[in-house]
Length: 350
Picture 1 (cartoon, rainbow, N blue to C red):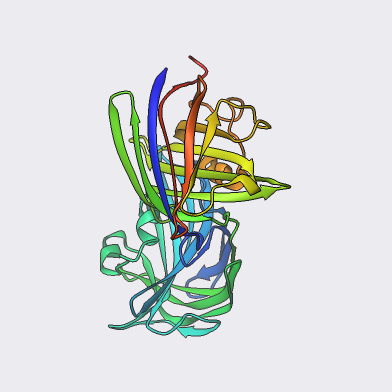
Picture 2: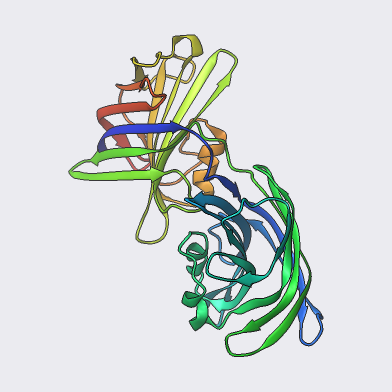
């Protein structure tokens, strides 16, 4: 049995996962030399942690005067006992706003427009391709195919969907040449809308203490804190989450779910005590939990459902063993805070 004390500070009414994020879809193209005679088709959800697997996703952000769009498709496979990945990425980086239209392939001091294809590389490179530290020079050792000529057409770009076409000629750093034709992509956003998209968690379990902080964005951030709210009838549910990676690549997830009649929720500047240990229909109630060895899919399941987790759904789940009290409050700036202390937690092994 573990004893846990938690203080969660949540901030910023949510803008979702980044400025624009898309987490599942399809990228398809024909290729060959001197003429296209083979096909590649990547599809699936980007947050899969399965091996083998495929996934497609992307994001668009603005940093200062630079707008950055990155669409990434991968195929992770096992060859001769090694886990490897084929990765195709489309990059548009420019000072101008990224809108529907045609973008001519090219690289200069102020912009990047093109697509890159790497084969049989370390799957961890996927993470490096979805942050703004992208550099062509850093990829040369992987002998990638890089677009020399061609164009990218964005036919749609919105919070829900990004779609378009591409074609051109590509050359590897070792001098091999291929032609890419009939390229298309359609990627959608199935991520839940966040009420709070970043924050800080201070957690103590037994004698160990930990600080988790940052944006709740598992596509771009290896740890984060956030929360969602939803209402069914007169009952309002608030779920706060924090996740942090473990050494084996899985996640530890810390969460707490609050439920109360919406009319009884605390006003900004106030807080309210919720009973830990009440049944779901006994309000106000709170359920803190800890989930170890979790996957990205399980994190997204918790985010998307906004329900109470149970032992039947998850392994390595710790839930309260005795009745206690948790506090939820809201600040005048629309941020939220939550806390509970000295709560015994147990898993199915007791």
